[in-house]
Picture 1: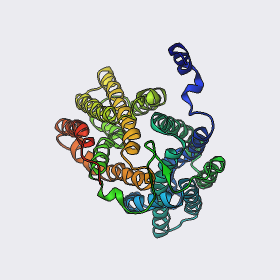
Picture 2: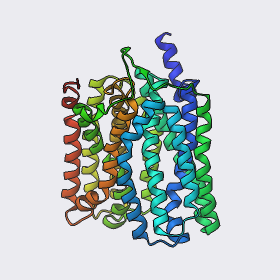
Picture 3: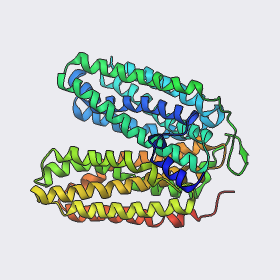
Picture 4: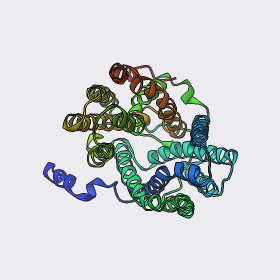
Length: 414
């Protein structure tokens, strides 16, 4: 294929999709699942508080406790994917999520809620690891990174569709509507499993790029210091997601005079940029050195974002609006580079045949960041010393990105 033909191909709409066959089936499965995520994320708290009658504090406590405990299942469930095959494991975990989500529609007590949400989040941790291992079986090298980038685009599209659909239920604000939405969400899990039936049944031994074969036994990831370092770096950088979802709404409403609707505008800028740019930004991330440099770029972009938002304290009107939109663009650039680096490093640094447990371990970085973010961001960015706090957070991002090239040069485990 000539360069001109390749350039023309990149301009076609289908170039934004995974290749036909198994990668596209995986994307279809993920689209169905993330539509369910959009339905659930926007209405679940309303259901548990307004319909079940649980206090907001108890719902928040239950979600936090279950989320932290569920982290312990990431590596063991990832190991199951290595042992029994990622397709089989992922499908089984989707079945568990279907059962628990449907059960949540009938809860009446806090303890029933806590038990079901814990099992649900355990299955979510495991399905993330199994899905990562499944990607490893349908692509290699640059193609594997591109598939992950496509899945990230699909995530944004699916969640947006689900959130838009849930707006009708929120407007009606009826118990029957919220309960029906949970059942609809539950059905997206078997719906996501259907396209997987057409994937080939992958064995528990996977041949990697270098032709090496390993079985899914042992706990190799727990002895891999280099992978742990990269996981920690990407985990710190992934705090940016909680900046967008947790800190930004409170900051705009409490610390600026900007229009409240700007919160939705910032989210829209983020969503559109990810959908349009993630695949392009992920090119070349299969190379470890380039992926590490992308981490460094992410840290610098996130530092710039924190500096921009710190300047908006007390501002209103067009000044605050302009700075916050620039903040949204810088934050999303950091997210795009981080995602691309994560796609490459999480696979290329893992031994062939052990992608399940390694993907499970990698998910711990983001999981820990999600659990710690509310307290950290509230202390640094929403307290008394907001400008200093934002700059301190930006410095943390920059420091994490800067050490990434050093981290990948550490000696591989024996």
